[in-house]
Length: 488
Image 1 (cartoon, rainbow, N blue to C red):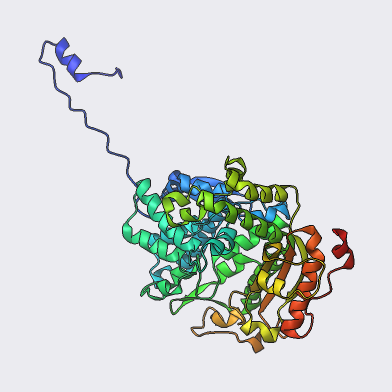
Image 2 (image 1 turned 135 degrees about the vertical axis):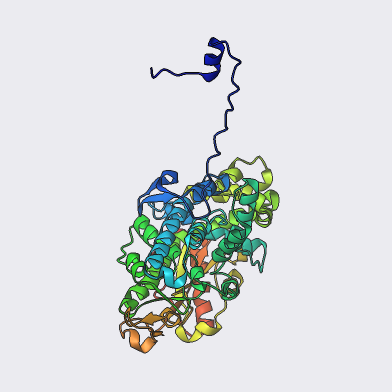
């Protein structure tokens, strides 16, 4: 009793004809619908900033592709780690962090206004995937490739990592046969390019607010900034008391626009000022820019033979580019790459372009300022022992603002008095605080000598340029005499 009994075998034993037993196939594993999954299907990833991050099945499909894994070889801050040794984090963990924060933002909106706004699982999944995939289109050394290298080899280039992310996303879906509805994919791509192409989001008729969560072209408050500000500050040892959770918890949709409690206006201003501080002290640090200028020169030299810029037009080729391109240049057998290799070796030996001096453009000149070039410096040389050439000088034009140029970013953000109030309003300059800066933009011009023995000549030409343009030297102080003479 209790033993297994085979009906066919039993029939034979009793002298009867064998009974045909139909074996029914097991039902195929049920595939989760878009945005619908349970705990058993998620995968936990631990992040040192946000803790555990739960990846849903569809997100895992994207993460496991070679195109997404490439982000492990793209440092978030490019070459900044050569000055700030802790800045070795990558686009990979940043993308996971934005995915997590996008989910938190959607969960909060769904909890408090889900029925009112009609937020469903499809909306939540779409915004989270936009956060996960928003940076897959970055090139080697992140913004250096887009803002420094490509304009040198393709003047007037309109290439952007946001649009490459959209192109690469199409390629990933096709190549890896990822099951996602074309309509959902289209919305994800629109959300990714929303910050660089505001007209895309402006044309949306329903749930326009969803396009402001990952990449906000309307007022600049988005979870992308929440993550990279916290992550970069921690990595570089820069103090920050900005609290993104406060904004995530207080956000509220009014008239298809995300608004914030009026009491949090200083916290929001702190978001933008912390970002500006990072730009001034980390991203555009004088030594960081010196290294970047050198690497750009090396990439430009190598481009003619390696066709680096050509890969930027084809997502199938582009995803193969990452920070390891430097090693590719160093190990290439081409004699034509000799100059590029020499520049890279100088970087490794810390024989950087020599920083001579800098000045901030006067406030009354900001509106009509044009970037200073090496030619401007050379043409300003009056008398010197050495005759400068354009290839002897490197210039860095730095622009730092609060995301809205000279305008106060708070004026483009809508606030509400309390959660029982239906009125939204901006906060104008005069109502913010008299302790906050009057000007919200800064332009800094830095000049470098590519050879140590040219520091004095370049510094003098740079001072003459200021006298010619502004009638006075606007730099904080003259280049120290000791620094001028050190290499002569």
